[in-house]
Image 1 (spheres, rainbow, N blue to C red):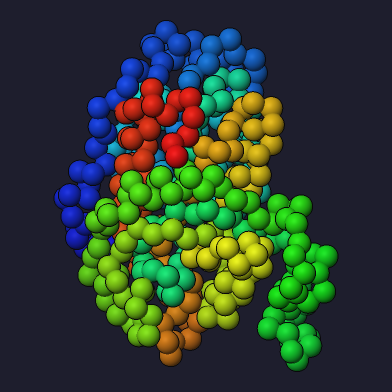
Image 2: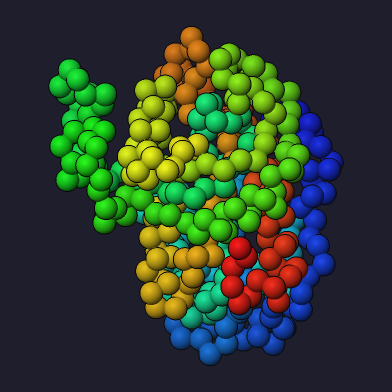
Amino acid sequence: MRLLARLAISAAALLAGASCAHAAPAADAATVAAVKACTPARPCAAKLPVRVVVVTMFEIGEDAGDKPGEFQLWKERRNLSVTLPFPQGWHNLAYDPETGVLAIVTGMGSIKSATATLALGLDERLDLSQAYWLVAGIAGIDPENASVGSAAWARYLIDGDIAHEIDAREIPADWKSGYFALHSKRPSDPTPLPPINGEMFELNPALQEWAFALTKDMKLPDDQLIAAERKKFTGYPNAQKPPFVLKGDNIAAMTFWHGAKMTQWANDWTKFWTQGKGEFVTSAMEETGTFQSIEYLTKVGRADRNRVMVLRSASNFSMPPPGEDPAAYLLGENQGYAGMTAALEALYIVGGKVVDEITGNWDRYEKAPPK
């Protein structure tokens, strides 16, 4: 089934990942050799200039030649020929000296993503002061907003872990759930709360709009497997569309939650923390950890929070189709997400278009983010 799905991806989608003409090389051979001679987590006189960091969260098996995770397509299809040992993180780094693209695999969950990102930013072998960051990962998606295989650019990142919780079997009768914000008194408490504990982050809205405008008309991969799956979502017109690019916000939570009630919670939680400005679209595990580290790194000149983009593509829905049992549906999806192949391709071609635009026109984007 997976092989058939992969064969169904259009040749045009695969070709879309090809690199465009690039600006002057980011690093020469002497610099690369000097950096490779340095010991990780130790002082290094030479530094590799990084133009774009592609942040992925997991890989399956090897980095090339087998079933891909989030990292593999970037590794296989781009000249990420320089491997940098990264023992202070989850996975070795991969770098292209021509384009200045660096790829990292953080590991799954906000703890791993935060620690790996901080370790990356403090690595003496790298100059990340002007780097753009593209978080590119798969996600669950709300069928109210889009279909499996779709790709969403986020403006707001909401943490789904920092909270009070009372078991739903013990909550007051008028509560929608037992989950509510720290320093509040009940779910959906109307009192505005400042996100002082990392409950919510807002990305650079101008950069989000720019990335969306650049990619919104792209045709995304589709296949018979996900086409059949989306037909089940009667009453959800956006879920029944072929994959498309949209704008939508992300909840990061270490618990892999699922179901219509949890999806409603995610919508309510997003509205609460963004004061009604955000729209929950994708669910994942890492963004708030990653961005918290970038916030810290920005304070010491090691990163720029205004150059961060988050792109999540849907490998599965956040709830089952009408009439299906959520537990059975979740367990079935865990055997192999229906939209995994299409989601990974969408990440690569949509994210790749932005990466190519930045690296191919570095003189335009080096000094300041696009508006």
